[in-house]
Image (tube, rainbow, N blue to C red; front, side, top):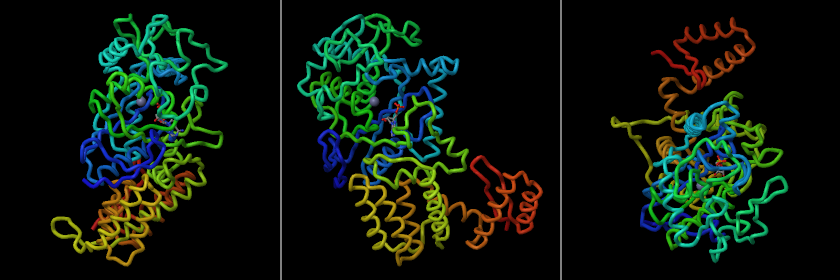
Length: 480
Ligand code: AMP
Ligand code: ZN
């Protein structure tokens, strides 16, 4: 297999050629959501970029196995084991049980992912499914001397490692997040950045989920879940591990510490981190309370795929600022792009394949598309190739074949755009007339002018066009 992807690796701090442990196969892990609230569009930026990474690998021909956890226990409001339990706070806020909250927000997360064309990973495992695996890893860490018991909790001893800070390249002082002015210091910790593997005694007397363990009834720390869940499904060696940049420390640093101490060898070769989506006030975060969700964008009339395109236009290693002005510009480009693709005049063979694809041109543009993605997932460059194809002096069948193939990775619904128009059975002129009438009808409905809205429906019906209002918007069909 030709390894041609070059990717920035947080571990080595440079762009490197991606070479998996087993030729042609990739073991990939993604930190999943903490399901105490809706995912905000910042979280979803990370999942969109990770989705593009996975699809790029598959597009290049790798056989990818991707695993993701669902954090339904153990994540406290500070990533350094202090503050409130996020799940418990969510349950209290909504007067529900922790498991009800977990189920509701896990479903909501996957529903948002579906709207954004984010593929569900091959394996999705909630942390609460794996308590025995966590206990086993903690037992081994205690046996090997990497962990200690104090104040009835079990802690990882970061002083036992030569290079605990391998992922960050920073010193202990710079990264210490465990003690802030407003948070009580945990005096059980021997070293500042030691972290909890298992809690039996904490300040949450009312912890909802508890399990028996060799150290008493309690619950796991947050970091142990990703080490165990990834090993359960991917084995002892992992190729690539993903998350947002806030996961680098302490979460991923602690995952490496636990996993490599447990295994006795290097664990994961490449670390992929997505930079944050910010709003005007800074990083978008769930704890801020007032955050943007996919549903909110839909309510404001945006197709979620417009947000996907907004993300693809910038590089995953740059912070991205959200604004409605830019989203509106993207919406205009997205609509125009779909229209252009819908206007391609293609001819198909009986088996549904396109009639006259120019192989040389197809290969040439496919190379450019792959080159962009292989340059550290340059999605903006990959989008430019789509425009280059549409502008090129090649036949429409070739254009359509290229866009179809690129949309596997971009997942912007570009293929469906054409199918929908084909299914309508209408030509371009009729399509733009109907779209115009539908826009007028939407305006009329908004203004509660139902007489005009009904008149538009009747006018369209006279021309043999049936319209139907769906949750996704109005769809139409030409009756032959
Ligand atoms: P959480 O549900 O808080 O565990 O976060 C889920 C994922 O979203 C993690 O990979 C985080 O690193 C990532 N994340 C959190 N906030 C942002 C943000 N503002 N922009 C991009 N990714 C984020
Ligand atoms: Zn994780």
